[in-house]
Amino acid sequence: MKTNFFTIASLLFALTIAISCASPKPSDSNEDTTSTEVQTEETDFVALVKEWNKANSSKDYEALSKLFDNNVLFYGMQLNKNACIENKQMAFKKSPDFYQQIYGDVDVEKISDTEVKCSFVKRVTIDGQTNDYPSYLNFRKVGDEWKISVESDLITDENLAKRAEKKNLTREMGERYDVPGTYDFNGDGKKESCYLLEPKKYNDEDHFMECEGDCNCLIMFSDSNIPSIEVETCIGGKPKIYGDLDGNGTIEIGIWPWWWTSCWHTFYIYTLENGEWKDFVEPFPVHCNLLEALEESSDQIIEPVPGQKGMFKILYSYFDEEEGIMEGTTTVKKLIK
Image 1 (cartoon, rainbow, N blue to C red):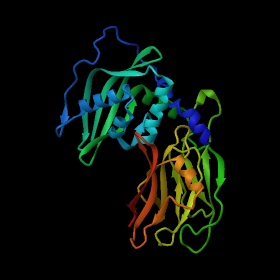
Image 2: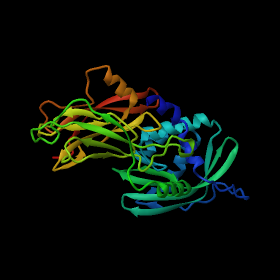
Image 3: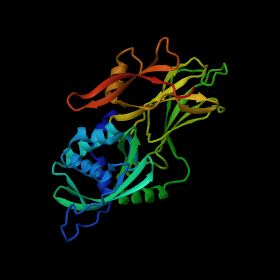
Image 4: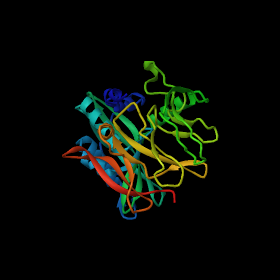
C-alpha cells in the first residue's frame, strides 16, 4: 500500500485538472487586471491570494507552508498541509513548465468573523497549454493570522458532486482487517475484538481513485453494543490499540488512514465517552517515515506524561525547508475531560 502512495501521488494534481473541463483562454490578454481591494479587519485578502499565486508559480514550498492551515479541504479531499504541499511538489515535478496567474478581479466575501472566501479566475499553463479555472480560496482566522483552509475550483466541485450523485446510496464495504488480540473497550469487564472494514473500490481506469459509495472505513467491534468508528477519507489502515491511556477504564484506539496519494496523513486517536467515540487528543500530522521508524523501535506515538494528569507526549511529523521531513515531540492535553 505504501508503494502505491508514492506511485500515484504525482497524479493528484493532474487528476484535478483532468476532472475539470477548463474554459478556453479569452481572446483579450488583460492578464492580472485590477483587483477588488476588499479588506476585513485591516487584512488585505487580495494580497494574500496574490502571495499564494506567486508561491505556486515560483514553487516556493516554504511560503505555501506558511499560508496553509494545518488541515485543508484540498480539491474535495481533507488533507493536512504537508500532504497538500507534497502533492504540489509531485505535480510540479511532473509538469516543469507549470505556471499560473490571477486573471481579472479577486472577489472577497466575508462569511463570518473567522472565515473569508476569495473567488477569482486562475489561469494555468501546463505542458504548453493554457486554461482558465474559476477558483477560490477560503481563509480561516487562526489566532492573529489568516490561513488557507480550502483550495478548489468550481468545475472540480461540480464534477465531484456529479460523481457523488451516481454512487450507490448503500454502503459498499470491501476487505476486512482483523486487529490481533481482545480488549475491554467499553470498561464492562468483558473483552471484545475489533476489525477494520475498507470501502469497496473500483478496479477500472474509468473510476480512478473512486469508491462504490463514500471512501470511508469502519472500525467495528464484536460486541454490537459498542458503536462503530467511521474514519473519513480512508481506504484502509491498521488500527493500533493503546490501552487505557488515561486510566478511566476504556481503551483508546489510533489509526493512520491509508489513501491513494501521499505519505502524509493525519493520525487519529479515539476514546469512548458516554457511548460515543470522540477524539482523545487533537489529530496530528504523521508521515509514513515516522511509522516505519516506530515499527523498528519500542517508542509509542502517544504516552502519558508522568505526574501530569491529562497530559500526553506525542510524536509527529513536520516539513523543514532545509532538512526535509522531520520528527517532532510535543505535549498535548486530553480533549475530553
